Image (cartoon, helix red, strand yellow):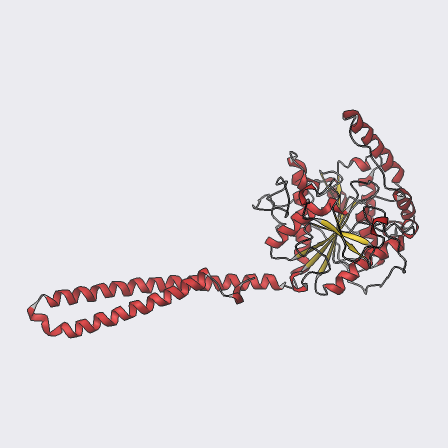
Amino acid sequence: MSTISALTSSRAIGLTEGLTAGLTAEPVADKSADNFEPHDGSFGHLVLARSPLARVERFAPPPGLLVHPQLHGQKDGAIFPLDPHYAPQFAGKGGRIFDKDLGTVFNVANVNNGGHPFLQKPKEVDTILIGLHGATHRTKSIGASLLNPLGILKQQAKKMGMGVLTVIPDLPLHGLGPNDPRFVNNLDFYVGWVAKIVEKLQQTYPNAKIALYGRSTGAVIGLELAVRRPGLIHSLFADSPYPPNTQEAQGKAIAERERARRLANPIAPDHVPVPFSEEMLFNHDLHLSFWNDFRLPRATQIFVRLGKHDDNYCKFPYIKMWGAWSQRTGIPVHVDDGEHNGLGGLQQKGDAALMGVAKTNASILLEMMRRDLQNHLPWRIAQKQKRERGLQIAKVRLEKLEGLLKAKEALLIRKQAAYEMASKDSSRQARLPNLAKEVAIAQGKVEAMKRDVEEAEKAFTHPSADTLD
């Protein structure tokens, strides 16, 4: 399929339609996104950009990073409640954990269950999934907006044998993210700050793969990170990135949508933009290397996704613009029948089509993470396979011993019957001692076999610790 046909076909990323049961984020109230299966592993419709991993360029923000006023004087690890707009299902469990070194908070589903992203057991982390949210909207453009969909991905990855750590920061100017003016005027400073998050995670989990999911502005930052810090991340899923010099058109589209929303519901809350966020995006537009300088983003896998019905981008030909970028770079851009949020259907009710699009996108992201690990089998997958092999061996042995026990019990019954018949026949009295000895021997073999069966049954139903995950 050519790049142009891939851009115009909603089936460019079609996946297997079979579904599996039991997919939920934990904790989560909405079950509408349950039951999707991962990508089937075929390569025909998932084209990935590949390039050699380069040396990571180090960056450390200068001292004196200005943080959000609520974080002034707070200790490292301080916990704040989640914004209720996007995270009601995590009430009482989830929270935002302050990282003083990075000057922001990380959104976690359960602060009381070892939720701190830098305090996990390294051997249990195969992949780190970093989520970068969008920009400009005060209540929607926050890290908590990604908690539910990435939580669902984490649970599904666990069923696939992958230990995934989700890392969801509040980005600069948004939520409780840092509000240093250097983020507004200096794109390299912004990208360097994101790179520092990745580098700190790499130091904590040196054997883990790094996957990045970015939505809208987060996708743009992800692409720019892959240019300015080549090889820093392994997989990049850029969900609904926007082309530069489209901020004014996006603003008009959002304004029209908000007017229509207020007409339909006069008491609906106003759209409240984040202060200085629009100025920041305008300034960043001028310096986007992946677009303006035609520099190639470098990661092991790159997937750029657009929604055909994206009302944020309806005022300009975004699909055509990304098609031209795809031709310049050779990185495929895929268009589906969804909207601005490629994972939004995982947490929406009553829209089967949107949910299907979200499940497909989630499956692709899971497959990208699986491919990152396929040449470096995680210890948990190896342990799971070892356990399965051990259980299979135990099952076969148990079945064999149960068959032998039945045969020995039948032999014992025959020996006992022969002894009974001889005891009633005077002509066979001389054989009684030998028959009694044969009965005793058969009885002993049956008892010994029963002990073997009992041990085999215990090994099958209660496997030892060395065969457990």
